[in-house]
Length: 99
Image 1 (cartoon, one colour):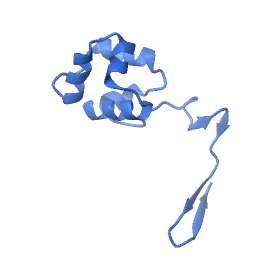
Image 2 (image 1 turned 90 degrees about the vertical axis):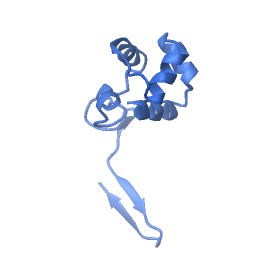
Image 3 (image 1 turned 30 degrees about the vertical axis):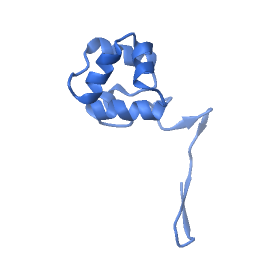
Image 4 (image 1 turned 180 degrees about the horizontal axis):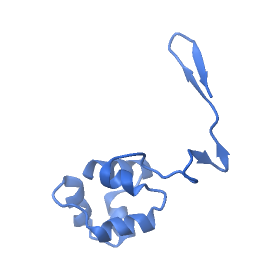
């Protein structure tokens, strides 16, 4: 879980200190979790769920799935819009559209 917590901090662009302050835990406890010295307890997980509701606890605890929950459980969404296609560009100047 230490690596996933580090990934989350990077994705959210927050420091260990900021996380500790927002969760109401000591900075040392975050350091110990990130170093692998300690495993987070229920209270820590509960505070993560309360303060970061879009974070997937399945991902945080087990590493399965994606870091963030989907807005409706069906797929990525931004501002009420659903992704319906993606274009992949290759280095030989070709591309593929996926729908």
